[in-house]
Length: 75
Image (cartoon, rainbow, N blue to C red; front, side, top):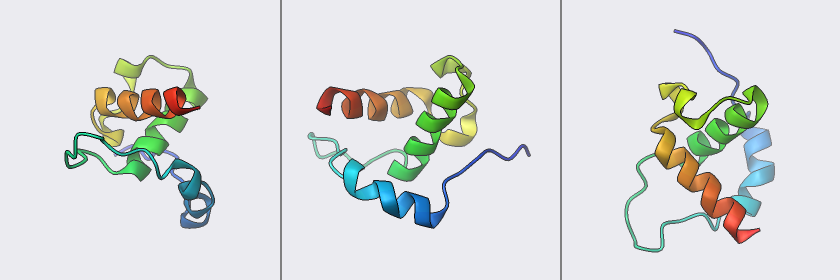
C-alpha cells in the first residue's frame, strides 16, 4: 500500500483549534474524521490534482471537498 503524508499529532494539535467549527449543522454523524479530511485537503493543495483524483485513502472525495468548502466559506 502506498503511504501518504500525514500530519503528526503535534502538527494537528496546532491547527485543530482553528478548524474545530467545521461540523455539520444538520446534526449528522461525520462520515470521515476531521483529521483525515484535513490531510486530504493538504494532499490536494500539495499535489495540485483534481478532487476526483484524490486517493481513496483520504475517504470519499465529495466529503473532503465539503469540509474544504465549509472551511473556505467561513473565512
